Image (cartoon, rainbow, N blue to C red; front, side, top):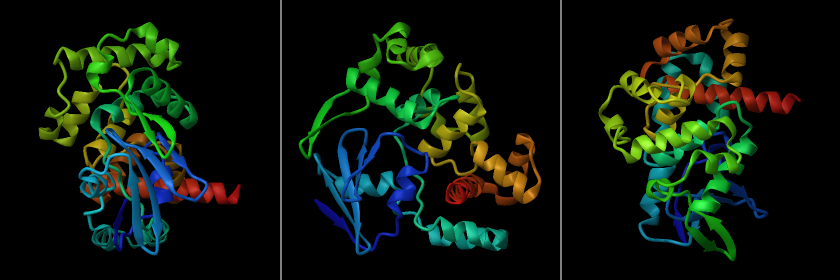
Length: 280
């Protein structure tokens, strides 16, 4: 177990805000998250982040990187308020919300599966794939399965994916993985591309449209200048700015918030979704 002192993170908002799908809220209000190579359990106690894991090797650095803890969000938020004072309520409601740095491969497969899909079914599909092809890990007397590596999926067929209930997305997953195996796609190559070129590179693949590609870049490549436009963002933009067209939403956000439009949109998404839930 390790304790990271004076950490400004809202675990609930960060973990449950739709960035990741494989996590559990425990009875003691801690959170168990399945990372690429280990299981971690996290809990805030008096501004200290308490972390337990089945693998404590380099654990502090792993957690800091995964939860983006070395980025000064207070500075970012102050800069955003200088651009747009109307964001004050939104930013205050999102204090402690972090952008998770997800493993690229798992993030891509997750968001291919996310198309026209419910969160519970996305999580179920990812769990089924992991249970079938991933590594078994026992942590705190419970069994978990890590998400499989690329080589674990090299012989998996379209029908195999269909059997795991990913639906019409089976062929998209299969084709993408085959391209990776055949080195037609290089996930690290994307790091060297501009955000627009990275979007285009990803969207060359079946099953990856602009929304999915934007999620991938925002949640696993730290590209804060791209963002998905989902139902909650559309509602916020329509209610606040009377903008309903997706292209106009993108243009508005990019022109106004520039390199951090993705972060602002994530704040808007989180704010609008929570407000709607509270009023329901």
